[in-house]
Structures are given as structure tokens and as C-alpha cells.
Length: 147
Image (cartoon, rainbow, N blue to C red; front, side, top):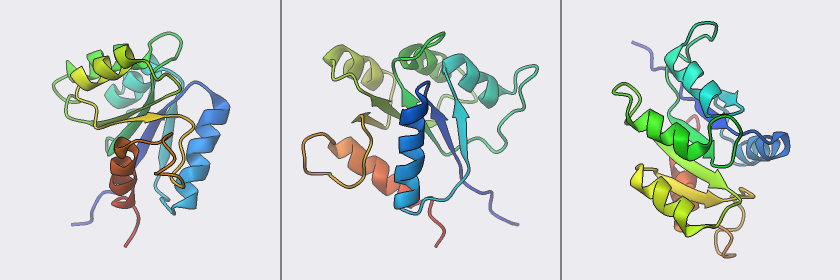
């Protein structure tokens, strides 16, 4: 039985931020499929296979989620994801330019696996811009690298 290929779902409305994430993943040689959604509604449609949207199969191993997006923001997406019995246990890492405690607490209450302040970079774990959560993300992403 062959093992299913891991993948990542990036939920990000900003084109430059999405390109930055792709660049950083390539830098650390994480070469798995990267699916993209521009907001929470689009991401849920991909995860659920809603009419007119092909379902991601298999589901991604990790969701990298921006908080500030139009139509359905990251917190609203997380609330919906966590209430869905099929999707509720997915690994989600928040990426945001927001350093607001209220955003962090809302995300933690919705069981995120990590919280990273953008810009996302794997080069500078000790510069204060990244947190231990980003180090945790880095280790999880490394597990996606081919051995």
C-alpha cells in the first residue's frame, strides 16, 4: 500500500505574502503540493468539496492560515473548521501581521498548533520576530520533506 503524499493548504489573500511562504518552503526544501485559497470560504469549499469546487483529496496535513482576510477571516474559518466533525482535528498554523493579544487568544481557544507573526521566515528564530510556535511549525514542515 503506497503512502499518500502530504500537502499544505495556504489560506492567504495577499499575493506577496503567499509568494513569500512558497519561497520560504522551497528554501528549506519542503517540496509538497501547496494548495491555495484566498479566504476562509474558499478554503472550506476546497476541504469539503462543495458544489463547483473539487475536494482536496487527501486532505492537507497542515493549514497555514492568515487571520485578516475578506469574506471569511481566519478566526471565522477556524470556528467553522473546529465545528465540522470531519475537519475539526486538522493542524492549523496562524500567520498574521497582527500582534494583538485578542487575535492570539481567539486562535488559541480554537486549538491552533502555532501562531506566527509575518513576515514568515525560517532563517531567524532568535530575532524576536519569530516565536517558539514558528519553530514548532518548522519541525512539522520538515516532517513533510522526502527522506
